[in-house]
Length: 210
Image 1 (cartoon, helix red, strand yellow):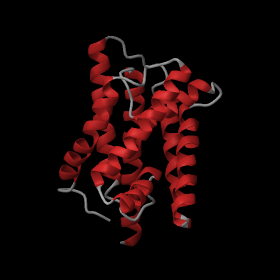
Image 2 (image 1 turned 180 degrees about the vertical axis):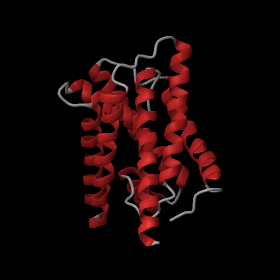
Image 3 (image 1 turned 135 degrees about the vertical axis):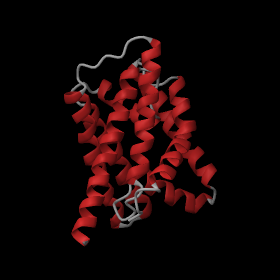
Image 4 (image 1 turned 90 degrees about the horizontal axis):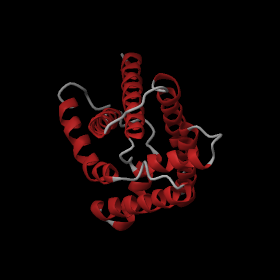
């Protein structure tokens, strides 16, 4: 039974991350603006052409893992590297293999692609959140640490998002490419929490929390 439950949790995580990776790539291809942390990965790959977006994601989020370790000074924070590596490879799986020839043209289709990506992203995040015993992402680890200092969930979220947006805008300026900073960046930041919450309520009816 324990083996079955563990296999089930692994399957949920795989499906969740595949959905997240697909959602991120669809948002990239829509060119209407991405989540700040995803935009940063995109621009790093633009600034260093030899880097794939997936590898750029590994570098940026890996740096976040190191920052968490420096701030928190607990070895368990390094487990986030497992998530970082997996997610980077999944992004490249979709971007360089499955959807390598996908071009989304026309504002209507771009909006549909971006919204579809947002739904997949929120659904995937909600799905992996049912695996409470699995390693946390670096952003989750940092959020917990900072929220313990600030004592306000809203202020903590605003501080993190403001910092990430500032970094993403700076990288967009350096790269002279604003395709991943746009109106949809604002929509994604403001609505992601609600999308995740909706999916959690739906999944809760069918999936036990582990």
